[in-house]
Picture 1 (cartoon, protein in one colour):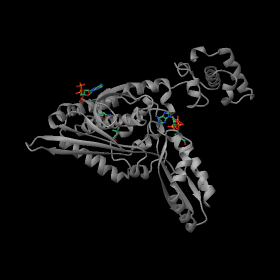
Picture 2 (cartoon, protein in one colour; picture 1 turned 45 degrees about the horizontal axis):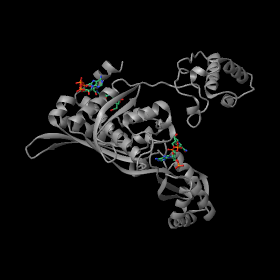
Picture 3 (tube, helix red, strand yellow; picture 1 turned 60 degrees about the vertical axis):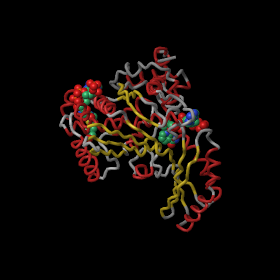
Picture 4 (cartoon, protein in one colour; picture 1 turned 135 degrees about the vertical axis):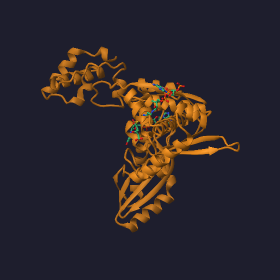
Length: 416
Ligand SMILES: CC(C)(COP(=O)([O-])OP(=O)([O-])OC[C@H]1O[C@@H](n2cnc3c(N)ncnc32)[C@H](O)[C@@H]1OP(=O)([O-])[O-])[C@@H](O)C(=O)NCCC(=O)NCCSC(=O)C[C@@](C)(O)CC(=O)[O-]
Ligand SMILES: NC(=O)C1=CN([C@@H]2O[C@H](COP(=O)(O)OP(=O)(O)OC[C@H]3O[C@@H](n4cnc5c(N)ncnc54)[C@H](OP(=O)(O)O)[C@@H]3O)[C@@H](O)[C@H]2O)C=CC1
């Protein structure tokens, strides 16, 4: 079944029943297949708005592949242009030497820019990338009587982490509890649970596991659970804790590019890029009170997320990136540009969430990381290394364009 198989007569009847108040919009899959239910919602919207949803309705995968665990009230699919950058040359711990990366965006000039950065990285002999830490976090907040009780609860948690681990890991055959870090604010106790979620981004996994652990905390201590997510996790919000402690994967990539290649590909010099990075990404970001000290990490993370089935809202954390750029001179006086990016909280997976949807899993196939890795976790590590390297590519190219005053012209030519 796909959109083309939807039953128009049944769809029109369902739309009538919603308009008559007999059915709710979210109940239609109980009365028809998912594709017909989606068509019924489009019929209703076309009756009640000026929209023509024929293109939204012209999707090519079975609707029930999405309505099972990815969306409710489905009407169709949004088509975002997707392109490819690379090959990205990198020496990763999990990623092999050369990968292409699909990027989905509506921003003209973005792929040209990242692609140019990939060319610069190739000219430098390739990047090195490493996943430095992996822990998906969920931090529930508990109410206690006062600070004295808070201290008792923290002592119990520290003495009983194994019991919390047994409870949490009883809900998953892949996830491993890495640590539980308590934080106290008056009569509030936060417990930041961190999980090695292997090839899953791990938010559902961590949430379900932490719920189980919280039941032990409530049974064994005077703490009362107020909210399973206490915002110290911190999911989909700008938060220094993610930029400092990390969340999901903390991954870094670097490269050293000879000065002549910087000139040929990026049309500027190592010194000009280093100065732009310092004054823009460091001084400018500091003055702005930014959490990320970079130029456009979010551009690459968002485009890679859309293309490979990640949760696009977590681009917030992906922007917690620090870019460095320095001029290096060897013993013979040859200059080069050393540049790096460190993404403190890149949350992605190659199983689970949207990664199993058809076009998204095709994107993972382009990178060569669909599904579970062997050993588990290595496919998501490889994807993180490739995304970090593409982020480095985007930084190099944009800094080069800014240093050579080509940003505006690039967007006039490619973005309009
Ligand atoms: C546009 C370029 C790349 C031209 O750059 P160029 O050096 O004039 O291009 P070139 O024709 O000399 O080609 C150099 C390489 O660029 C690549 N390239 C070149 N053209 C294409 C293309 N059409 N499609 C794909 N790849 C392309 C390609 O790899 C090529 O190498 P080759 O393969 O030929 O050996 C450059 O001017 C540039 O990168 N500008 C910066 C644009 C940019 O980064 N935009 C995104 C950021 S804007 C934004 O959203 C963030 C911002 C700015 O607001 C954040 C902030 O505040 O900082
Ligand atoms: N719940 C929440 O509060 C939030 C949820 N989300 C959503 O969560 C989803 C992602 O959650 P996530 O837990 O990653 O995905 P899923 O909920 O799809 O679960 C993925 C499951 O795949 C199984 N699995 C099979 N092979 C592997 C492997 N190699 N490595 C790891 N797991 C494997 C695991 O099952 P098992 O555990 O049984 O071993 C794992 O739990 C996204 O849709 C996102 O939008 C986002 C933010 C918040």
